[in-house]
Image (cartoon, rainbow, N blue to C red; front, side):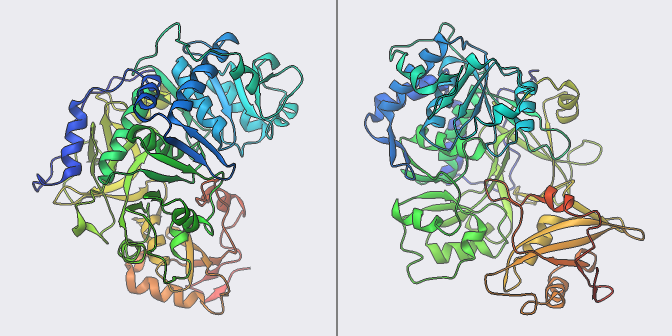
Length: 554
């Protein structure tokens, strides 16, 4: 299962010298500094340093967890779970709400040396059964709100005595609160976990088949917090977590707070309409800002906030300057994925890159290259696949030797499946999933690029681009658009959308088909689920405006 990768890897060569960049000096320092032995040690050291300072404020529940409380409660919970039979290396599936119980459970299991299997809390009984079986989980910790799935789940192999229920009781199962109460604050694991031991089996989205579990070591999380702090540059005391904890983003944002002695303000669920209210109310200094939030009407008090920096992943290019002017903060983005953590970051100091679409330069312990079709490094400016390697990345996919062989090269490069390029100065650009492309008349069209142009149409709030089979050109470009509230297709007709695209895109990239939607199917993190758009119709042309025929397809 484990893959051999370099213990450290320098970033790709830059064509300029940034000696004055504080973030780059910090990245290099991180590569020289030792990490704690494990996440449990990080928790204990943070508790000793920060005591009664709040680590996490779950404001929907009016619950605050301090650093000292975190250390005590995770020790008790780890001891209680050990008494129930959870050991070093035991796989434990976790299906919980984004609340304090998730934070405590995750870190208690890592302190124990167990392996956490986060489960999407939108999963059906079938999907839960798949993850349990595929990950070989021996225990399940589940919120009472999701426990009814177990009544439908005849394929579950976990005995009821190894099911721990949070915020409720279930016949034959164990109450989470009782497990914690039975433990001791002086707990020490029989076998102390170490940096290279597995911490999570994190399931990917499954866009190329059934979801695969990426095995992440403890060092993945230890490094993640330090890298976040370095790439933000500013001291961050308060950050907002509006992503579920079962996603990498939510866990990574927690590590940012834990590593830096900050406080994370945690929303139970994402909300575009309340997002900036949270930012202002809790004096948030850093957040991941969804583009849909920035499409709300501007107001005179938009800059009345404590934001220092906002990460604006995959926003349209013009939006970065708008965000900086509107909210009075720095707008940046980066590049990473489940298997890698953070791989690229756009330094705060690189103001000249605003509006270019860059995802930056390599973070600490990451080497990045653009690979040509034959696996050699592509020339600067050439489009290829983004490859990454370095210390504390995924140990591989659990029980998937064929997938590991396909994803990693013998010398440790991870083939991301993403298209990208690198400019002459060394900055990288993400062009979308290689499979999230439209292949039209031999030309590769990036869905991300076309979507960015579509979002630049006045009145268009969101957009998604998909390929449509075509007998002549192989594939055609179809655009789904969601308009701003109160607008109709009569206000923003398809011909005006096509005309905007013709002014901003090469002719072959202009969408042929346009479909209006009231809203998109979404993940819990509010990302558009294109797979559901594809599954909604057998013929994606139906219900669309055809720009070639200048008519609607029934």
